[in-house]
Length: 120
Image 1 (cartoon, helix red, strand yellow):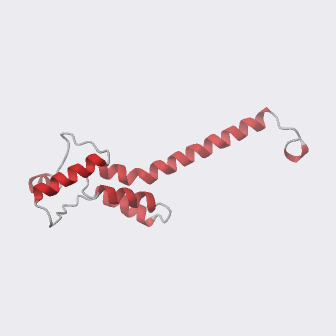
Image 2 (cartoon, one colour; image 1 turned 90 degrees about the vertical axis):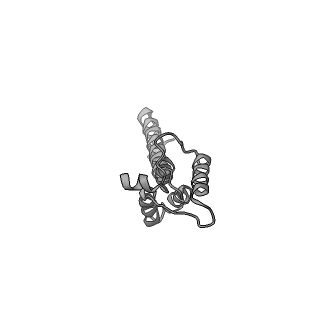
Image 3 (cartoon, one colour; image 1 turned 180 degrees about the vertical axis):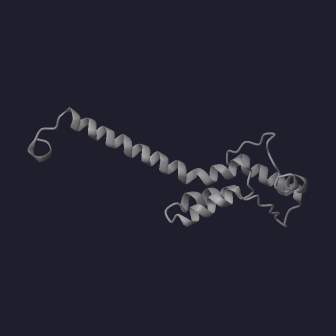
């Protein structure tokens, strides 16, 4: 017996499969958008990439923190931890980006280099 006392036909099963695929696509899009700020921050070698990534995942339900993480991912923060010298800070940022899965290629733009900041 199917819905409303009628047997389920071919198109009923096809409809269920289409709904399941649609739900899976919506979930995949949802997960892609949630992780977007973190991926952008890692790609741009942001010094606070891990914090942006966490804020992107955790802030999506409230929307406003996710928007802030998205903007923060594009912000060129020239932050220097005063406990380390600039060279040590640069090395620490590179190590963090590499740990997060980022790619440190020739397109790496150092946020601590004043010459690079004036060029852009």
